[in-house]
Length: 215
Image 1 (cartoon, rainbow, N blue to C red):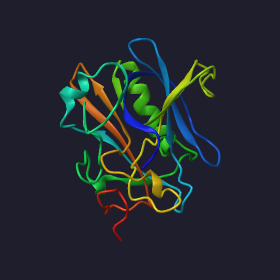
Image 2: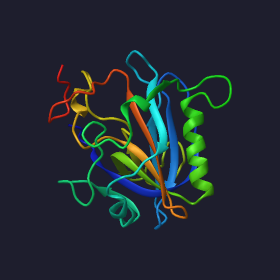
Image 3: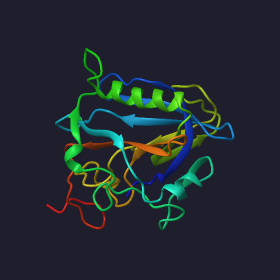
């Protein structure tokens, strides 16, 4: 199990930065209703072969949608599984596994890579004042240290915003059930939810009660 605090951040997106390089992450700057800022760091390329992540963005219907909407702004740890349940792509999926498709982090041309797919979702949320619910592992606050990408103090945020089970070594320690990462966006005017779901092609979809590969 990861040593980070798993939970959900309720906040609104302010801006984003595309991910580039050998180990790219897409970064979103968010702010809760108290003015506290966070960074969501989204892995968009795998260190393991094949490097393209599986992704799906589309409508979803979380069973606990009213409980999610009732959460206070900011980060809420998820434990036992209160106050809301953690996500589990296998045991309680919000999408069909067959809808996931591999996509490169960055490619020439329009609307054909993860950077562009994610920024389109973020921009839509910003324009509509949509609430983002970011599920993942939290870090910080890092006393006296500004955020590396957005400069706010103290640095804090979430990562592991992807499936967090079925990993082989050296990521075996990140496995667990009901602790998958994702971003759910709620558009209040239409009471409509859209989710961003990511998984590594190297991960297993058959896992035991500790989240480890059964095969």
